[in-house]
Image (cartoon, each protein chain N blue to C red):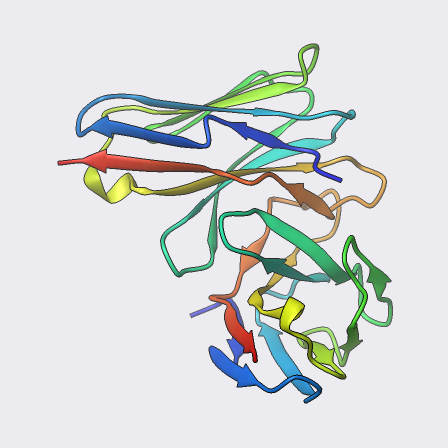
Length: 114
Length: 112
């Protein structure tokens, strides 16, 4: 089924450890996004990639890095995890402006940093 | 900074009743979207309304947009227990088309 796939679904890290969250889409979308969602709140944009080869900071980029590996894949890296990064992380994709019809979301990665 | 803010934060109704939730925003927008999130799941896109549109329908969903008041409403008619979820509005301000800002959501509970 076409969509956005995130791995892993769950992860527990110790403070200071690093990890990479993977995201792949087969929607042939140009734009991809990483959001975090804290309990009882909406989504906050971490980084986005408007098209292959470009990445830009969102609202809460500190402590994260991203790589747009190709048109399909957009990864999020935590270099030194902190408890404040405990959250649910969502990857999303969308078509180009003019063809834009909203986001397609992955099912999320639930990350706990202890 | 929060662009879209939903109201109410929580809403509880009986099956068969209509549910209305509102979204207010601060700056001009290209479009506004509504999403549903079931507990522990990702967000699902429901409907997008562009700034030059005033009303859109999709099945039991009706969305209105009032750009003069910078507000939108989502009406779910004849609600079902399966409509229990959180509903979020998201606004695309157009400066980076496709980069949307989400509100904190309305949690809807539909009692059977």
